[in-house]
Length: 282
Image (cartoon, rainbow, N blue to C red; front, side):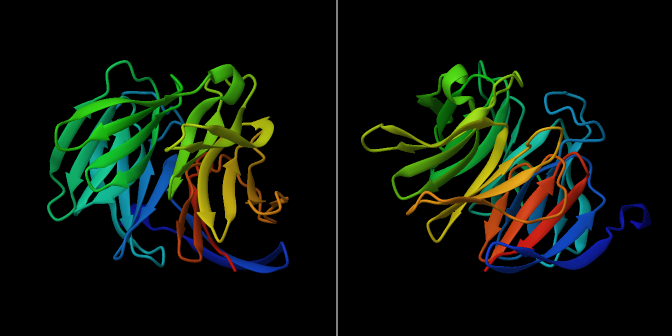
């Protein structure tokens, strides 16, 4: 385990109306997503090379405690390029390029495997209910609705890649599915939008096209990660009431990917740096 020791640094900085404290955790291999449950946190690692679509079997998931201390560096291994995660009933579901997989957290055995035909770039997972997951495919523009019991799936929504970008990060609040768009071609970027599950209406919330990745909601504020230009990553705070948009004043981030919010802690994978940033929000 010595080769996998993670270095920790606690630094204070200013952002928005006050100070934000953050902690940096080093030692990962292209970390793409973070998921935190009651007992631990999990980090999906794409692998040594930042190749999110490479079927090279060097992807894995790390397990840490909620303070960022390593518990098991390769908790789940022999994956290709794991990304978004979601836990239901002690099963950790993860998308791995074109397949949805599930692992029993008590024994680490794979208990679910569902290839999604025609998918290209499965990216994030959101829970509709304990039997149904929503999965974004950035490559095709499709958000799939997956029945975990029957292993059947269909298209919930298909976005126009040129207009919106492909769906990357997902966050569900009541009947609104918030979506961070990302252009898989890397040409025009995507937008931030919401999709109403009841009336099927799309509303663009941030029209400036950028390579958006993760998205979470806290107290009517959407936090959105963007890879920015030339790997100068940004975390936006979008107030849904007054539509004000601010940038969190954080240190340089290269490739902020699928963010996760655990109470007041915002976890940010810095994918191109091999690090995780834990930010304490107010």
